[in-house]
Image (cartoon, rainbow, N blue to C red; front, top):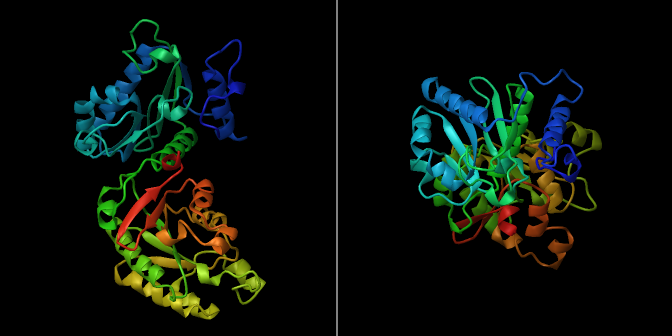
Length: 369
């Protein structure tokens, strides 16, 4: 699903493209199944405002709803809503806000995270929306179709303001939108180098699973990386996957047989590793476990970061960790496909680059712009 209004969405009857986008959204998530439930098309800015306030009131009076994703368009609009969203967060709701501009001290003023977006009137994440999955699924989304120069400026009753949107309680739309916003959210991270300990404390989004490069224990840098990542994972209550670089060979398949490979092309647990002669990985998993971190390992069969990122995507990793030495590799490693650009271009998962001095930095597609 392309979450931006495209040229194909725009027609003579609807030059905004919103109706075309919504139709495409419905078709994508209906996917041959039953009709989208509870769907209603909206054109009134006043009605959209009333829906917004109703959702916000429910978040303040009910049991905690988990997460609420809110599109404010820009930080100035959020600043006007600080007191309301502080009450919502005090009720146990984790609110993630999206819009252009930066906001100081968002953690103490009603948001779990503020996602600073590039200005774009066509992308979904830049619009006005409230989306939650619990306790009941709800998605409201409103596109401002006013002149681009007036986008996000003034209130709904300001001269020239026009909107189109929809509301639905269909879980397919809700989950689809949340998955997209999670990807956008994870592109927003501290862009400065800091200690791994501080990064563990300040990274604004959840980390549940980490894929980290490893080897047969001969590289001291990777040994230090394993220990540092284990401490980071422990601090974030995350699981780890060790990606065994030493297993990769152009000539030899690391698995005992093709049948065994077919049956075990997944994360391998500690007690299985000795069967395929990977005792060193078993020992490394013990390091993770000693810090209370659940961990497993994967045995890749191909060189290159595109293969690594494919494993990370397959296992739903939230973070990929590599050493700084792999950012500017030698000629042979570059020919094998090990460059930071290759890795960033092959995945939407954030990449943590760890330096030997204990500092680290998060890299994403956004940070490479």
